[in-house]
Image (tube, rainbow, N blue to C red; front, top):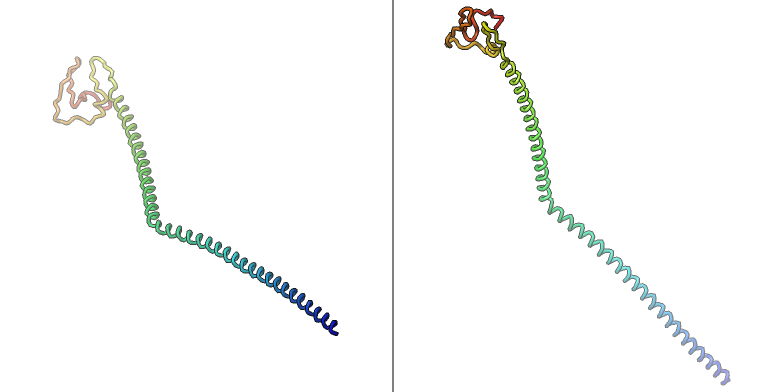
Length: 183
């Protein structure tokens, strides 16, 4: 039996060696699968952490930039308010100047109109006063300008006028012998 036992033992030994090698190989494969999985998990976690950190950094930079711009803007508010006030005052002054210029033009137009009216009245008055009276020999006529003016003061001298017919005395430029409706 030695041969059978030896064969069985040899087979056992071969089986043990084969099984041991198989177990060792399987353990090695599982070990490498585990290491690979561990590397993948750690790599994925690192990737997720990197992406998360980049996203956080981007968000942080954006928020800090926005906060910085808001802070800068709030520091500029007093100067902007004073600029707005100056601009409003400048526009108010421009409006006042424009209104004053319009009023000045209106006043000048009114004065020009009054001047034209006064000039027209003066021209008409001059034309009336400068009418030349008809000269008839032997009669005394006065100019219409003397009739339109108030009578001369009483301290003026009375001047006798000789017109060839009879002596008439002229007082204040009006002949005494003429009826009042001819004056």
